[in-house]
View 1 (cartoon, rainbow, N blue to C red):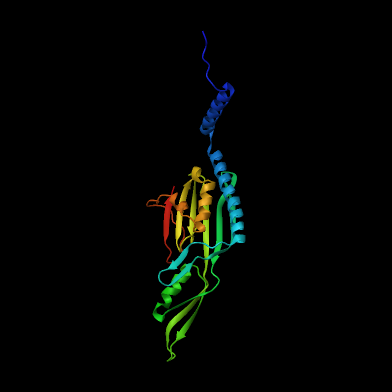
View 2: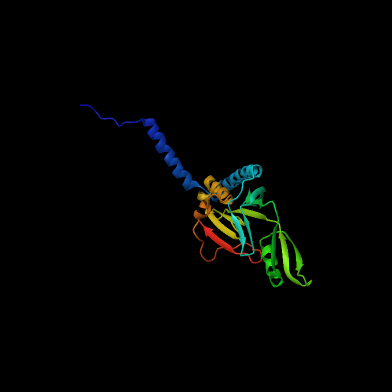
Length: 243
């Protein structure tokens, strides 16, 4: 009587089952120190990835498909990527030297200054709004034919400073990402669980910076009440998300 044999290579089957068991055991034996080191590895990898990406953008200098608007006062539309850099800081956590944070700074600019003329009664408010947006400007009063100052002119340098900060929380196994002036004059906070902080997250971030896609924000639902807020500039708002 013939004996039926299962198809496939027995050694391959045993190898797959063995690897699966090792993976389960590794998860069981994982310690807080292991988790800290793994998240630190991911954050350091993100630093090197961003450092290279920003270096390429500084050479290519692409036009960014964003509009930076201050009410009906001023609009900086489709600025060009000018320059940027990434920095980091390390700190001892539980006796292990890990990345405390990564900061990305970049500059978007238009070639010519924008002149904004407003009634003298609005000068103070416009001054505050421009400073809150971290825009550089020169101001001069404008006299009418009777040599009376009724208006003021702001000559604004249309250069937007974008900022992104990655702050890992090794205890909670999460990465908080603060974005300032990325797609508008606003601060947004997004928080990723460690297992969701992957290369595609960084790719979506760069596409978001360039105005190509907002998939980066779609990765994160809105954070509820109690989310930690960053230090804000005057008149600045914050939106918080968490995934």
